[in-house]
Amino acid sequence: MMRCIAGVYAVTDRFINPRRSHVDIAKAAIAGGACAVQLRDKEATTRQLLEWARAIRDLTWRTDTLFIVNDRVDIALAADADGVHVGDDDMPVPVARRLLGAGKIIGRSVANEDEALKAVAEGADYVSIGSVFATSTKPDAGEPAGVDMVRRVRQVLPPDYPLVAIGGITLQNAATVFEAGADAVAVVSAVVCADDPVEAVKQLKQLWMKIRGEKR
Image 1 (cartoon, rainbow, N blue to C red):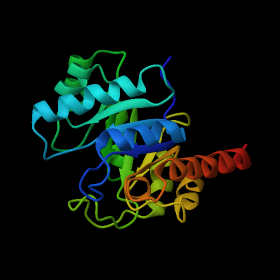
Image 2 (cartoon, rainbow, N blue to C red):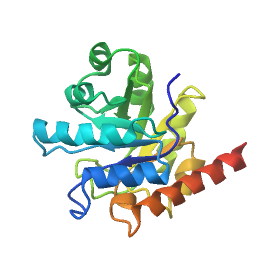
Image 3 (tube, helix red, strand yellow):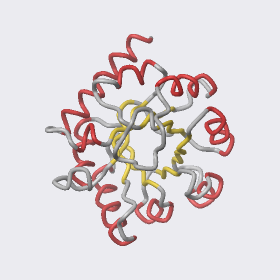
Image 4 (cartoon, rainbow, N blue to C red):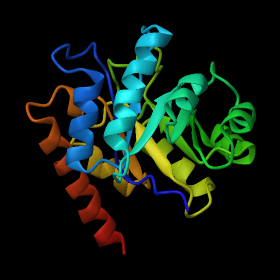
């Protein structure tokens, strides 16, 4: 049974806060109780990326935190990650599935309801909608989709299908995202730039647990 993607989904970034490495962020995510950590670096060489991926795989091994690699199916395979996250310019979901096999997780970035339904049909294990709010960590994110898009995508997805929201999400606005139907919030700056990244993850997780409890 695949572990659930719900709560806090931490995404690494070595540029917005150079004092913290990908591995530092992964350590904080695990310590704070994140459901997943995604290694994202579009500038690194393949060898650099593999080195970081293997280090993070070692950290997440036998923990409750999934390890996801952004874009690179080859790195996910080489490091034995739990899965991969792909977007419009990356390997199509069906091809990634053929390479990774049935036991790995494949996430897909989507921008609207139609893309979400297509991702489900192609076999993605979860979809990520965004950018919900304006964000500086992904220059090509386009206009913010808004919380309403989270709600609309949630309505067309199967009830238990994981929906991740990403883009400009902070402790201050995460409640509205969870209330709109997101199972998890993918955060970059909110953790990477926090004074205490472990505490930042913990607070977001506590918020998720509180809202989840209120919905039940």
